Image (cartoon, rainbow, N blue to C red; front, side, top):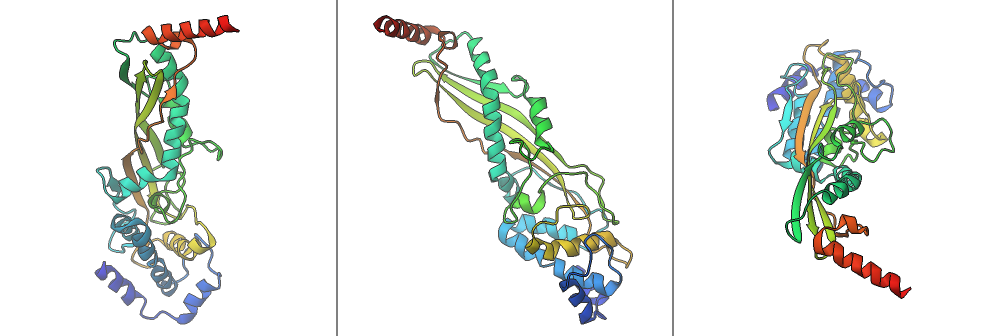
Length: 303
């Protein structure tokens, strides 16, 4: 890292103060190439401030991804980064509020299919646990399609927000990867989920509990040409980076380039509190169904 910054410092030795003031006055257009090396170097040092933000709110792994984006010693696009065996980034995606909300919505969608499955099973004990894959429940295809829905109101839409969260710093929304500069990656953004749901049926207590066992996959690209430039505060860094991407290697080093990113992470796995089983006697198997049927008959006789 120190060597790369030294190269940038040497390249910018003739930097004039006015070049930086032009940026501060908002006269540089986002995603437009820098006009000269001095301006590009000034923007590069402004972009480096993202490293401190990434370290503070994302940790060392997130900072390392952003350093890949700004590492002038690498070519374009940068080497892909993959995270799938624990660590800050995997945990950050797992614990994000959007992941939790999507997992909860999948459970809601699965309830009718699970009820039908339970009715078709001949019980062997009062308390049993089953595991149903999303494909068993007829949900795998529709859920995966909706993860990248263009409908902003879709509760399954997997778009991460929050500049103080790891997914918000690295993934955000989804689009085709690649940019107008030499740093563009052609890898498309992807979202997918697989796994299933554990179902515990307590026929004695007449309750059912669902526990998700889902695994998510996010493929994205750290880039800003194209890319979401964020809020006014974020744009103080994202606009310079989009300009650097568009500039490419026309002045020698590639100051910024796309970083293909893929993350495999488990869902939070938060179980739903036990719910009463459906009122129809046919939903409840064995003695539990008979007791409920007898109770209903007694209530009817008393009316």
